[in-house]
Image 1 (cartoon, rainbow, N blue to C red):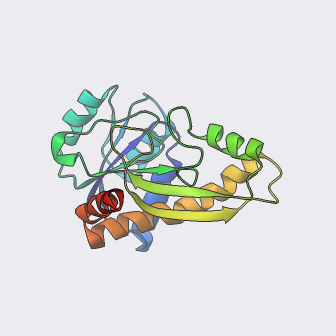
Image 2 (image 1 turned 90 degrees about the vertical axis):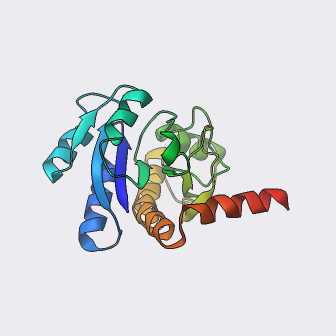
Length: 196
């Protein structure tokens, strides 16, 4: 699949995509990388990898850039805002969230806020969720979840480190699954469960 990557910061998740594609762990090609924040390290890294790298301040500008590329799937890789894609990509946006949805998710829960909330609650397990994005935070069909034991973590930062390690497995796995099963499989499966 042809991939667009949206980011807002360091580009750690994009680094993982790049490595996973080059090693054969993830099937797809990154066609464009876009940030809604100017001058972030993620854009510099993208350019260093040879990907077209753009700054675009809002969804309209992002979508104008995406229109210039052949894109099958949009990957939100540390993109810290709700994104409204063009109509033809409406069901083709994948996000990763650093908890096991439905725990510690929704508006205001991102990055270290999630791990601090998990730490304060005293959870013994955490993890990550790769899901399709819709017009609500952390609400679309789930593709992959991975769990980690955090009972012996000494800080929210320790939880973040363990969760990121499984994110690096989960996101490429999810992209591969979407490539194998097709986008509609996950949306149809989610709707079928809601109707039961």
